[in-house]
Structures are given as C-alpha cells and as structure tokens.
Image 1 (tube, rainbow, N blue to C red):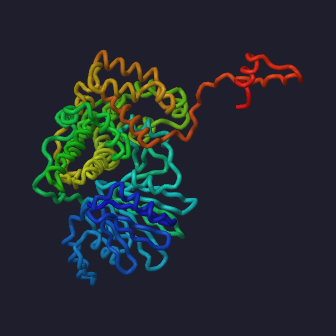
Image 2 (cartoon, rainbow, N blue to C red; image 1 turned 90 degrees about the horizontal axis):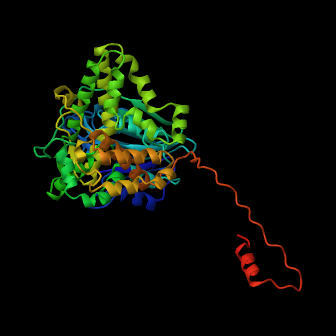
Length: 525
C-alpha cells in the first residue's frame, strides 16, 4: 500500500513535496521523490525507467495475466512490483493502459520521453480515491491519494465549497467528484485523466468491464459494518471521543454522517495492532444492503411519492428540518442557485415516475456508480489507510448488490446513549455547536440548532441523533481544516461610534487631572 502525490505544470519545492508526503507515507524507507522539468511524483515506491515514471496505490488483481501479455509483446518485467507492471503497461498501451487492469487501484504515470504528459487513472468501482486540484490559469495540476497531502501542496489556502453543507445533509456526501473543499475534486470511478502543457486537462470515462470477484486473503475483520457493535467499541471509551473525532475527520478529509465510522476506524486500529497488513472489510457490503433497502422501499411506493420516499431515506437530515437549520443567509443563497434536493430531482425524478422497473434501474445505478464511491468506498480507503491496513471487499460492489438482502437502515441507532441529555458527548456537542461558533460559520441558525439539541436531550430519537451527529461532524471537520465561506457572512450592522478629539488647550492654562486623563483616553487610535 503506497499512497502517492505529485504535481504537473508547475514546480513545487522538494521540501514541500517531502513534507506533504509525510502526511500519509508509512513506508519504512520514507518517500521516493522523482522530479523533472515541471513535474514530480512522490510515493513509497516509484518505478522509473527510460524517462517514464509510475506510481500505484492499491492492488492489480490480474497481474499474472498482465505479465504474460507484456512478455509476449516484448515488455518483460523483471520487478514484479505493481508500479513496475504499471510502467510496462503504459509503455505498451499508452494512456489506455487502464483498459487492461483489474483491481482496486489509483495510478499515476509521467511520460517525459518527449513533451511531458501525465496520466491518472482510477479503478472501475472507485475503491481507491484520488484527489486533484486543477488551476487552468496557471496550467497547474496537483494530485494526491489523501486530501491533507493535497492541501499541503497548494500555495493558496482553499475555502469551503458553499453548496457542500446542503449536499452533505441531503445525500451524505458531495457527489460526482465534488468535495466540500472549493477546487478540490475526486477523480470519478473508471476514469482516465490526461494532462499536457499544450492541451490542459481532459477526463475520459472508460467503458465498464464485467465485474470480477476481488482477490482477498482468508483473514479479515468480522461482523457487519456500521452497527451498534461498532459504535459500542467507540462508546466504551467515550471520554476519548472529543480527541478521536477531529483526528478521524482530518484523515477522512470530508465530514461523515455515518455514526459507525468511528467504530470502523478503531477496528482497523485493532487489526494493525494484531499485526494484520490486509483485512476483509464488510462495512461497505452492509451499506450496499441498506442502499438496496432504500431502492426497494422507493420502488414499492406509489407514483408521485417515489422519489420523495427515496430522498427521505437517503438524507442524514430530512428536507423539512434542513431548511429550518440553515441560516437566513444560507437559505437565500440556496434559493438563488438551487439546492441539492432540486439537483436530485432533476437527476432521478423522471425515471422514478416512469414505473417500478425504470425506477429500480436508475436508483441502483445511482447507488453503485455515484453514491457508494463518494461515501462507503472512499470512507473505507481512508479508515484503513489511516491505520496502515489494506482493506479489501469480499466481492465486487455489483455482486454484493445482487446477493444482498435488503437491510433496514437505522441512522442514529449506532449512537446509543452518547447524545442524550446526560450522555457522555452532550457537553462536547453543545460546545462545538455553540451559538458563537455557528454565527462565525454563517451557515447554520444557532437558535434552530439549539432547539434540535434540546429536543434530542428531552426526547431521544434515532433520527434526531443522526441529525445532531451530522451537524457535529461537519462543524468539527470545518474547524479542523479552517475552512471559511468564500462569500462573506453578512452580520448585522453595528452603529458607528463617533470619536471626537479633545479641543486644544489655551496657552498658559493647565488642564485639570480629570480632563487630562480623559484627553489621553480619547487620543489617536
């Protein structure tokens, strides 16, 4: 497992590259830095030969078939490392090399044999995230396996992507490659990106291949994913949650509304301490089962309410509550540009009302191709990577969907009693969601959030707890990354204070001690 980062179209000092690599590098020998004119690649292991450099994060499952194909075509690979295989595959197939790869991976290749060209690629299911920041004005591309490492490469601090909070509370994540950080995007599943100095950046979605069963070791993590058992592991030491949650969200790079995420993070830590380097991870399989339940419930609904039923089951915070929780300024912003619910309706409304068959097909594709990579698979990669463990799915997402038995989602059940009025997190939640901090953020209405907290304290409820958790993780994440709105917050105007300089004293007349003190206090400044 070798996370990587790099740049193309601009020079980044070597010390900044190494500092960024230390964010996620866990190789025993430290990061390997390969640099050329206007490009750099940094990873724990880099394959470099003949001015072609390649790095790989993840696993190629069909390496034996690739070895045979490469040798037959005259591209024998002496080193069986994944990066060396990737470099040889590029030398044979060029930018189309990913057409012949199966597995869970993200890859980067720089070809400097002529004018330098960068090629990035992600696997078909989107199991291994790859983030990038493209500055078209400067022709500069930065990319990394993890958001903290990518931000360390940027010269200008990014801001909050303003529609992000609404997208997060509507669908649980920013979708279609967006993140909640302005200008930072995730390369979509099954996508190849090519960047050159003359043509800039272009993204191509590859044709989908038939799903394959993942090659996995026999040992792994047990039990379902985000369940009360996983949260119980976190709740067993609730006093540490205010310390663990910021670290977790920093590693994830995005807020996460799934209460089982913290339990999964701790379970991967247990696997690492037990000496496990690779582990099965059934958590996304549980999320797939919940997604299938959402789809089947929506399909059974009558025409006219099918999409509303699906959207309500999907959202961390229901639609009517979202609007009340937003500040007046943020509500006006969303009314002007359109909110995430409108985008969802534009995307899924027509097929949902075209009948049960069309609805099932459209919602299934949305769950597997859009939602799962942005939520469950991205989360899994970062939770395991933060603990130095390579997580693999028991089967491909498509096969997991076909075999899954629909499981009812209980979004707040995993929180147990952590968020009740006398629960161990009650004080921490009110501190993070304090009115002053929310006013400074400018996105949430402090009075509405207080009413939500009071309701959960007085009448604990799974759905209320899930809403509180979603707001808590968003605010902790936002403060952890010090992200502010690009649009200034319009605070109430304060009355102007008129400062009047004291009249000059007449010659020969001394000022009294009282008047002298007043004059000093009202002096310049």
